[in-house]
Length: 106
Image (tube, rainbow, N blue to C red):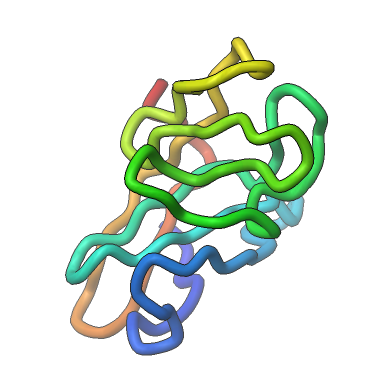
């Protein structure tokens, strides 16, 4: 687990981009109240940053073609994407947000 930011650095339901770890893995964090979701910040369809999109009730929507990815599973809920994006484990330690980019949940 790597410390990425403070919980207070994240606005509720607004995507935030980070590069995490020695290999600078692109990570998208989305705060939903006291829960934080971490996904690979790369659309599986067009390879653009998902952090540039918006968070909707369906998940995070890619700004380029409109594919939407579930924040918990990374699975797309709308075309043109058909492949999920990686989802990473998140741990809150006090006010700090930690992410494990070495293992994916899907």
